[in-house]
Image (tube, rainbow, N blue to C red; front, top):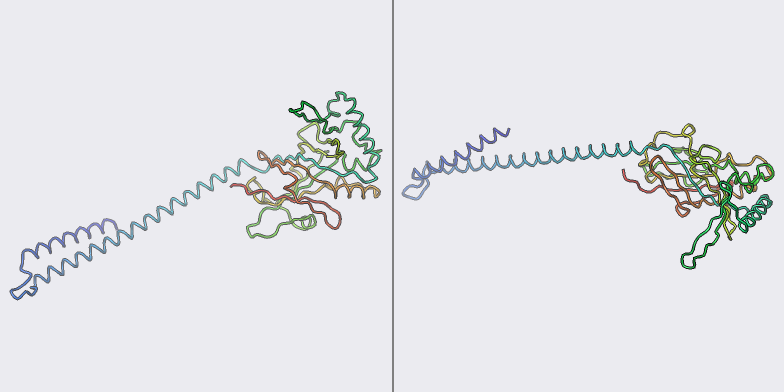
Length: 339
């Protein structure tokens, strides 16, 4: 096609030249000033050659634009292919695996069923603060230092599960059910829908809909630490916070439909968190205390790690819901994540 247009263009230029020479060599007007026959031939040939040359030029311009558009389309497709390749590489190096959770859960202990334990805990902590002893992995004082006054202030006490101040499973069953060694958190994650459907925002809706990924962590399960659970007692607030450290989610018990396989899949997803049922007491006399504590509990801070990516979730990032059955859940929406 290109060679054919080049030949035509050459012939048009040659024809224009020939007819121009003819026009100069012959008389194109007679004595009366009228155009002669050869003059008409020369004029017609020149105009025809110009039209052919202009048409060829138009065809070349159209072809050039088409070639440019094809080149741009090819470049765009190559860029999309490379972008998709990079996205797949990023997804491959950020799989959802090795999930670990660290959480600080503040638990109200006003119920009368906890009165005996909270009194013993308060008495023991006050005695320890007055006469502290070095008891590693059992109890330690938490304090802050003011660099202006050079004074150290006691802000709390950390009680490890091996400490005698930890709730006794037999004598302090109610407190042990809430703060004991079988505390668990359940997580249900719903991938953002391209159709824009509403995702669950409360515990009832979460139970009645299919999550894309479900997993649990428990203080009596596996953890990346020798101290998976401990109590933080605030001074002078007397708040009790349960600290769960590096709890691992056992992949054998995950429920997944394959929609969430890499960290980028979490972008703008909804996560519903609730306290696991395995730490709920079977004894009727303790259930009211347990439900009251769970209803008033607050997740102060949460670190959740998916493989190499960790998310820090503060209390302000969570929306708390309590349904008509006094079941508590917390709802979190992941931020927009780059592909």
